[in-house]
Amino acid sequence: MKKNIILFFLLFILSCRPYSKEAYLKDYESFINEISLEEQSYTEKDWTSIESRFDKFNTIWYNDYSDDFSLTDKFKITKFHSQYLYYRGKAEIKGLFKK
Image (cartoon, rainbow, N blue to C red; front, side, top):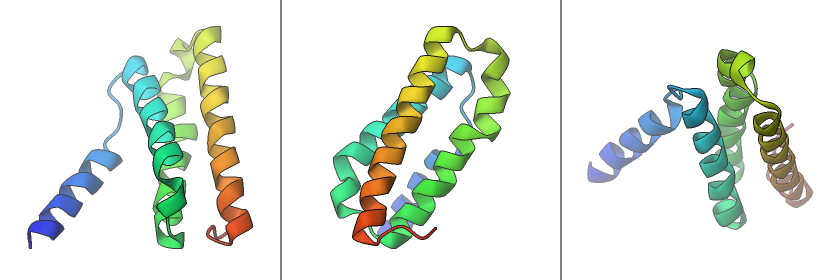
């Protein structure tokens, strides 16, 4: 029961929309850092969840703040996107990512 509550809380936090451009950039960076630290232990199911969140960063949430991004912000976002593709590519090579 306790594990279910913790899992629910974690999923709730992960699904929350960033409330500002700064929060978006900070959350995206944290998301990428988390992947870099944990990618060795991710399963195929984990990658499905991660891909869903990545899609939100690059579509819905990006569009929410795209008019406010400076050139520097756009470079950061491109860097985060590239890092994600690197880790996803490694997972694909291991056969852990469903296309």
